[in-house]
Image (cartoon, rainbow, N blue to C red; front, side, top):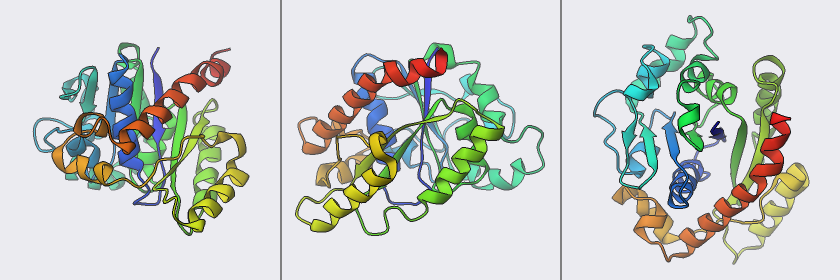
Length: 261
């Protein structure tokens, strides 16, 4: 059975979509069959992997119109990587979900039909803690939390963890933190070091050793519709996402096994 990981932080601009896209692509490069679900109305994960946001059905149709997720999945230009796209239609989903039955579990029910077909399913969540994010939490085995190495990095983390605890109590008892990844690190500043220490004090052993640096190639890659492993495979950004993915793979056995025992 494939593992479902939601990439989440309700703050925007923390490298969430960059992390979701590049972890998905790196896992695929390593021979894992991966489904990347874009659950953000902005559709940046969709365009960032080179998929047209306005062609065919999307995650909106899965959650709102009861369309089978298989009908929306498209093959990316990266071998082994498939995408369930998003577009602006998803912006109205929060309001439409309010009156629906089992509104928090609609994504989970759809993913049950395809979970066995993939090694990993990565969900790029929107920058909010609304019903789309709660759907991702309910459907997932674990959460990957990107936090930028900048001032106010921990702002809102308490609210995020409160939402996680509510979902664990009421909807998904086995949900756990896969890990916290520090992003946008500038080694030239003392502030980055201070922020990293604060985050490690808060999340303790859940913080990955790999810290993603600021990197021009990482910023450029989405505009070309490519993950960093394709756009600039020898860049610093590509090397660090490779290291992060290796950490995720190494941690999989012990953490994932705990939920299965």
